Length: 195
Image (cartoon, rainbow, N blue to C red; front, side, top):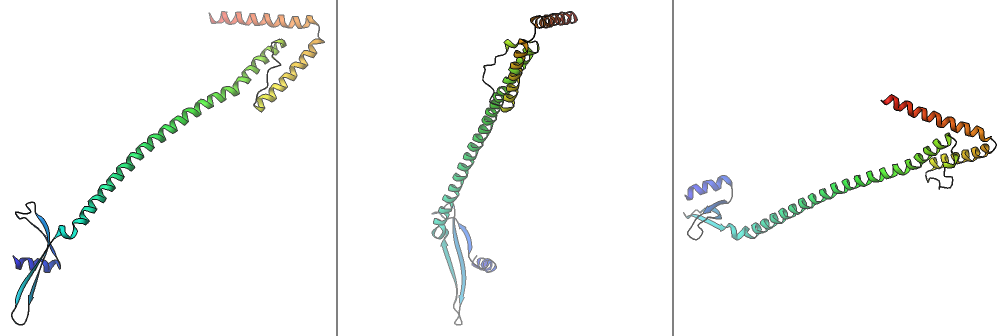
């Protein structure tokens, strides 16, 4: 066996690591093992065996390495957990922001459209010379474009009221009667058409 170990060590060029099972270490312990042949010109031929317990040399390093691996695994698990929480927070934030912006945009559109709808109704009333149906005391819109339309419309109403004062009542009455009659005829014809 010594000869075989010498050959093996000569091939590897250093220490051999072997597991030795004894009654004291039934699971097998790792030892560093080296054999050197010593001889001289006087005929001394010796084999020197060096056996060192691996635990004695590297035991503390192995334990530190195991602690480091456990610490790294714990840190990775923590990072993964935080990443999952961050993703959930991100998705919830983006979803919430999307819903909030959608609601705000709908409210903003209604706020823009509301004065236009009122203006449309008032224009329909003015078209049939019902100038009293228009509320000229209400506040103007905050939107510049709508406000400019309202200002022009109110100026038109003031001018129509003034012109109406110079028109005979019979002309205004006839126009309104004609409008009512034609509106009633249109309603009746649309009812007949739907039957």
